[in-house]
Image (cartoon, rainbow, N blue to C red; front, side, top):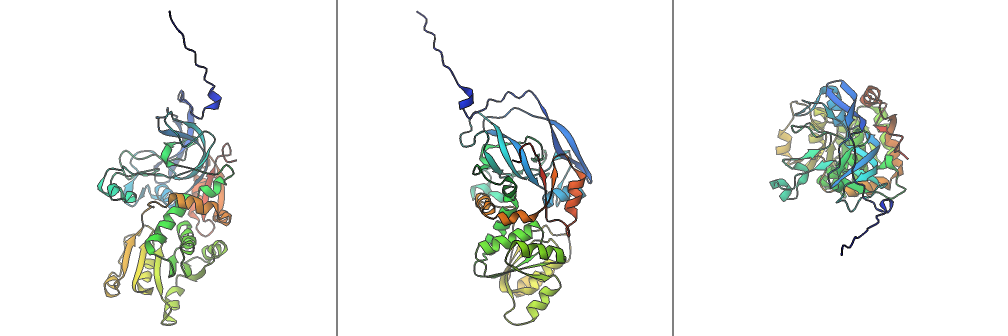
Length: 369
């Protein structure tokens, strides 16, 4: 006797989508070289078992995106092949691989762009942000390059997704990655109870000021060469502001006028040298911005016994950053312009105007509900 078993599966009750993608095309922001940014057509691929397909809702244009756009490189990371840009994003989940358990279709998510290898000596020591084999969305550090997420339907690993509340503001959530960088710098600076100076009032500097306050700094000052930038940061955080020129004058005004910690976010060599001068002996300088080659007054590090550290990306701060930005609706004021997906040069050129803009974002109206 032959027994036939029948199993009825109601697919719309299951949160696992089987990938049957037949190579649909989508648009993406692809950098080909300096000032050669194109909206290219790319072909979707099937999902691996542990992957998630997203509908990009908001993507923030980062300083590194701008370096790739302007110069075709960031530091030693040079664009050698066409590469999709973008690593600051919030999205809707469109499809999940068959082994994905903790992410479901229609979830709102913020994306951690970091993909450490997990096996190198740095990963084994818990220092994944300086992984020897790091793959970071939209990075030309390795060959082949790691494509970013500025495409209509990017694919990421399931563990890169931080699931948000169903009513979460996706524009706010797209600020999580730069806030994680700022929070990492504040943590390295051990800012609690300290007088902190942040040099550079761009996105990272502004968020570093917010993060320093969150981490218990007693006072936070922000300096910049542009008054417009200082006016913006005062609207977003309870800080005091100084022009770059006035920083040394402030310190010279009294013996108690010093800084315990400087978070240097401008990348300007002059700001680095000023930081060395205005720090109290035994103070901390945390370098967040990429520095241009220059002559630096390194002897002050010796004579004042300063601690100087680099702050590269973030370590375990991403989920905390997501929680923090969602609790701060005032940070929407950091987003000074939003362009529809598909607008390329205009969006990136706007980001170059630092007096007018802080954070410029790309929005895909299909998913930015």
